[in-house]
Amino acid sequence: MNKEEFDINQELAHMRQDYADLKERFDKQQIVNEKLMEKAIHSDVRRLFLSKKLIPVGIALTVVAAVLCHIQGFAWWVTLTIVLFGLIFFPGIFWVYKGVREDEIYNSDILTTTGTLRKFKKRYISLEVGICIYFFAYVVAATIYMTSLTISPELMWKRGIIIALLCVGTLALEYISAKRLLKSCDDIIDRLQMKENDLK
Image 1 (cartoon, rainbow, N blue to C red):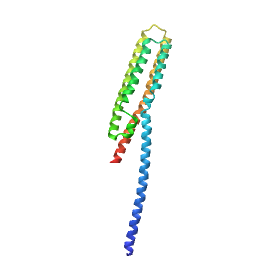
Image 2: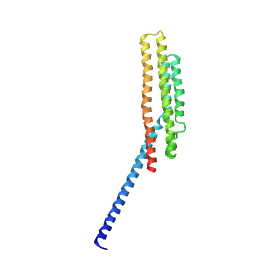
Image 3: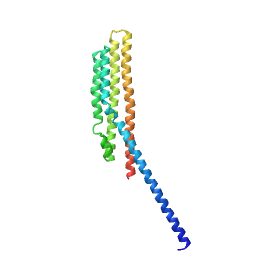
Image 4: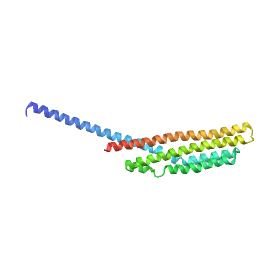
């Protein structure tokens, strides 16, 4: 073997070693990326199912609001509308989550899971729009009712402020919760699609 062949063989050996090192680093990076993606998906899935898990808290808050209205001497229909809200909203949450299961997000095929999550997102947005309409109707009805009563302006303002605080507080919490939940839903869909692209 002459010097030129020896140099070529040495160069090829170096190239093979470099390729092996590069492949090893790439494989390690892929493993790290997959672990990070799985961790992010777990975090998003936990956030996605938070609304469903907080239903008992929501029911308790609705009961407290109804009791407060009754104690404050509000008309019977005010308490009734709060109770009706609970009777509509909480079954609505179960409707939104219909067919969406935590284990299926991890174990089902990507296409089915993304389709299910898109349906979930549409149902959730519909529920949120329904909540906003309900509260708007509630505020209008409460305003009309209070202006028709022969009560002191001070009491009217007091009751108006309580109704406004209840509505604004509930809608603000709902908005923050909905924003985070829909972002988690979008993030899960994006990550599943990235995973699908990596598999191709």
